[in-house]
Amino acid sequence: MYKLVVVELADVVPRRDANKPNLYVGFTDAALEGLDDAISHAKEWVRGNEVELRQDLARETRFTSKKRAKKARAKLVRKLGNQGYTVNRDTTVYRMYVIELDPEGIGDLGRGYLYVGETSKAIEERFEQHRTGARNAAGTVRLASSVVYRRGLRLRDDLIPGGVYFSRKASKEAEVRLAERLRKRGYRVEGGH
Image (cartoon, rainbow, N blue to C red; front, side, top):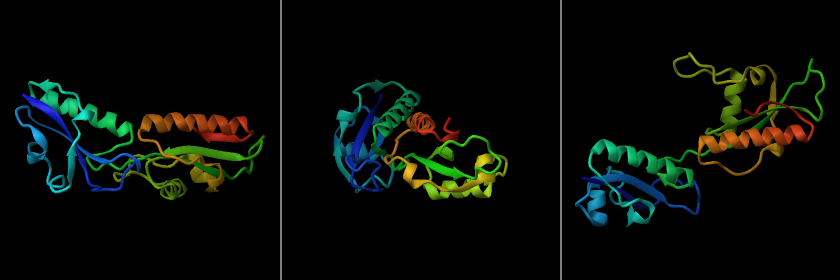
C-alpha cells in the first residue's frame, strides 16, 4: 500500500507565487507516518530543506499499486502547480507578449499591426526566437511565427498585461482574450490563438 505525501520546503528554488511555498510531492509506504518517514524516501534535494508535512494538501487515499500512486502523484502535482505552488522544483510560469509588426504592404491597419503570443520563456528570449527563425534542437520544428520572422519590429511592453499564469491552458485562454481586447481597441492582430 502507498500514500501521497506533501512536504513544505525551504525555498530550494524561487517561488512561482510569492505567497505559496515550495512543495515536494511524492508517495511512500502507507505504513510510514510523520515528516521523517515522508522524506526518508524522498529525493536528495528534499532532505535538509523540509519545513513541515502538509497532508492538508493531499487526499488520504491509499493505493494498492505503485502505478496508481504514481498516477495520483502526477495529478496532484498538476493540481497544486495550477494553483501557483512551486512543486518538485518546477518554476515554470507563462506570460503574454505583444510584438509590433511592420505594416508595409498591409491594407487596413486600424491603430497598428500586432502579434500576440504567450510563452514560458523570458519574453525577450521568445521575441529573439521569432526574429531569428529559431528551430528546435533537432532542427525539425520551427519555433518562430512566420509573420513575426518577416515583420517583427519590437516588443510592445505598453500593451503587455502584467501577471503570470501557472498552466499552459490558462495562458492560452489569456492569449485569446488579450488578442480580442486589442482587436476591439482597433488593432489588427495576428496570433492570439
